Length: 110
Image (cartoon, rainbow, N blue to C red):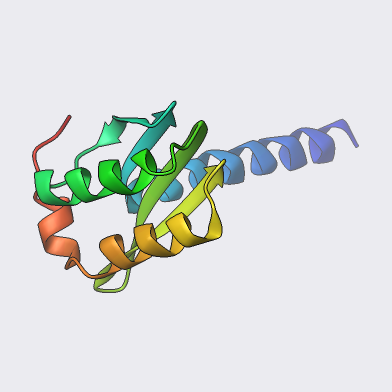
């Protein structure tokens, strides 16, 4: 019985590690927003797109949010958590979605 429990725990931990590894592999970049200031904390983003993101979150100023840009087929998609209005979220999705994934992936790293 103890062997079965140990095997189940090991399998669960292995799946958790695999999930985090897969999630990290599809992540293009992660942006942290604090008081309207944008910081790239993981990955890289082209300067033009980063400038557009900064403009969007500056007016009205976003207090705190995390933006995660991930690969999705031949485009990138945006996952946002935090204090982003619906209008700003749609503008951010438009900016990220209109840039081919290759231009986002080949950006300079932060």
